[in-house]
Image 1 (cartoon, rainbow, N blue to C red):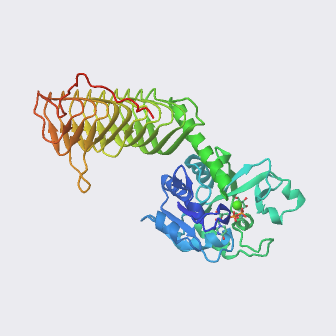
Image 2: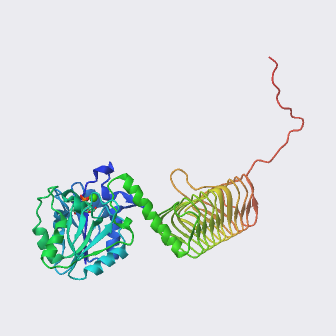
Image 3: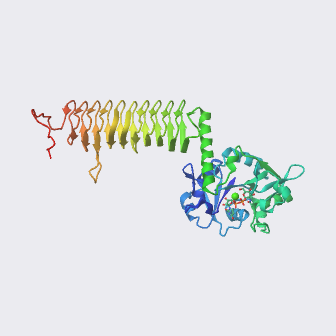
Amino acid sequence: MQVVVLAAGQGKRMRSVLPKVLQPIAGRPMLAHVLATARALGSAQICVVYGHGGERVREALDAPDLAWALQAPQLGTGHAVQQALPCLTDGEMALVLYGDVPLIGEATLRRLLDAAGTDRLALLTVELDDPTGYGRIVRGADGAVQRIVEHKDASEAERALHEVNTGILVAPVVQLRDWLGRLRNDNAQGEYYLTDIISMAVDAGVEVVAAQPDDVAETLGVNNKQQLAELERRHQAMRASALLEQGVTLIDPARLDIRGALRCGQDVQIDVNCVFEGEVTLADGVQVGANCVIRNARIGAGTRIAPFSHIEDTQMGEACVIGPYARTRPGTALGDDVHLGNFVEVKNSRIANHSKANHLAYVGDADIGERVNVGAGTITCNYDGANKFRTIIEDDVFIGSDTQLVAPVRVGKGATLGAGTTLSKDAPAGQLTVSRARQTSVPGWKRPVKQPK
Ligand code: UD1
Ligand code: CA
């Protein structure tokens, strides 16, 4: 099976410099969704028909398994598929998809391909309450598809038909070549219509069959930002529904955004307004509070992430307690039972089991051992303006509040740092190190009083 993806349309109604098929659904270009589906079907060849100014599309999505065919000028859908013919192999079946119909699903397409078999023409059709604008499926008295008539060319009687062409079809390559070569543009739009091949198939005695999608949303196209936003929600609803099906608890499936792959174990709970990006894995029993953003992360079993936390390129062990308002940046690796509280930022650091930083801290480029307590307001001074250095904190260290650790620096096992310490040399194991001026009190000192005017 080979796939042709039509992506030459300009998409002026997007009112954007970004080509239409690069506009994102779930953070990924619409065309990338279609290509992923084509790949999932095991397509032997994918040919993308791109248009004027489409170089940007090609640059953005080029891959070794793609062939590109330029369509300039754009003379209709039949003309567009014609441009892909050099990429197609006789004896194969060709599936026609659209770069601006991003939600088309694998299961639906498998059914369409099955219907086509090795020698039939298969159309994906839907029944619409309001079919205005679409090509209508004209069937004979026996119910067999006879032809498609475009809305603009249709009679009143034909316009009353509610079964419409989605544009998606499968045809044998050999016949497709022949039919496309015989298209004419003597119609209401002066275009070479792909849809005219249906009556040619009927004339040639090729059986024409129709299949329907699992969900009408799969066949919806995008021409403007309104439709883009609608399909984004439809896509998210499908993702949420798949998670619910798996047993994930979503407090409100309508308030969830997944832009990538989200894998969940058993009894995972996700509160409202969370965004998941890239590859995220939530192990059994993970709870994610409201308004969290989690990107490229693996979260261990039983870990709880409280509201408004921001997690990026991070690994967390089991039973951690994170947030609210915690931020972990790239290169964060937490062991088990690690606690990060409000306004704690961690970057490129390892924090081992049972260690805690509960309030207002910056841990950057650090290695923190087990059972370490990082006091409120503690900061690793990892950057001298030119270079970054590491801070090593060994097991069982207690760091008093408002401490600055000027890297490179090491705190030995079991050491205690007094509150307010600015540590610029290594602190020996097992001892108290403190670097603040001794406290003094001035007996008899009087507060200044306001001078009489
Ligand atoms: C087409 C179908 C119609 C169907 C409808 C579904 C034809 C003649 N009509 O109509 O039966 O109900 O889609 O939405 O096929 N494209 C190109 N090059 C071109 C023209 C179009 O690549 O020269 C691409 C567009 O980018 C778009 C798709 O083909 O992705 C459909 O084109 P569009 O002009 O929207 O077709 P419709 O007139 O809506
Ligand atoms: Ca259209």
